Length: 289
Image 1 (cartoon, one colour):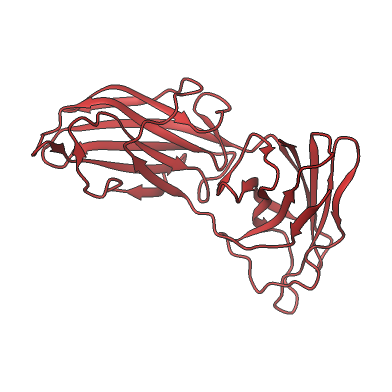
Image 2 (cartoon, rainbow, N blue to C red; image 1 turned 90 degrees about the vertical axis):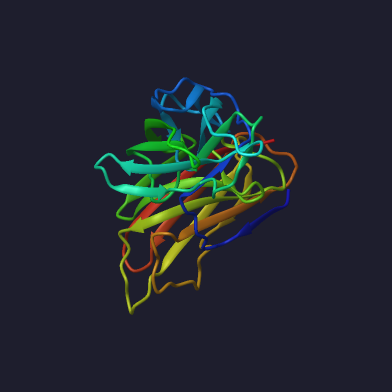
């Protein structure tokens, strides 16, 4: 079986927000929202996800959720179009504003027959697992005073397919990323020949020596029968860093080609500080299909 591996890549993963007029998937679970109408009417407001949601008002780190406004009315019509705008604010439990965007639609008009709008959030830095947040939306008519408000408290949790053991070296987030699909995946399922990575973000506990950060990365990938798929004693050999920023991500990257292997696959990565005895180990369980 041929397996390719990239030792280290630094990428930036930000907190993203977007909107679309396309109807998203139906909700996997019922979520609790607060709504208020001031001139606009919305038949249904619901939250949905692309992947399975772990529970009511609960999402995995890196997951995308959509706030859907279905069968809306009350906008002023101008030459067959209406002109909605969507604002979003996300705040922490302490009330700190983490994201604010006042023009998700960018002033674009919508045809009169478009009756469903939605905004999406991708839950990533500066949002983290283990904390609770509030997302507030304001949908309003730019040609009038009508508006509609939606608010939802939600919790972000870590992917259960990943276990972390810390011993001096600490990490804020570890997650699985599918480079082929350009998104975090939380179901533990990966296709053959897809480039995936086990990502480490916000490391703490390492020491700086001679103005350098030196880390080691030991990797073991085995299948359920104990067959070794790939192994590396130190994928970061001869690497050093001047600084590791909050937005930087250390990656162990893997591509599985189709062959004789038995699911599930265990992907274990040990990071250690070469300037101290601090280390941590992350173990991900994935299924190749």
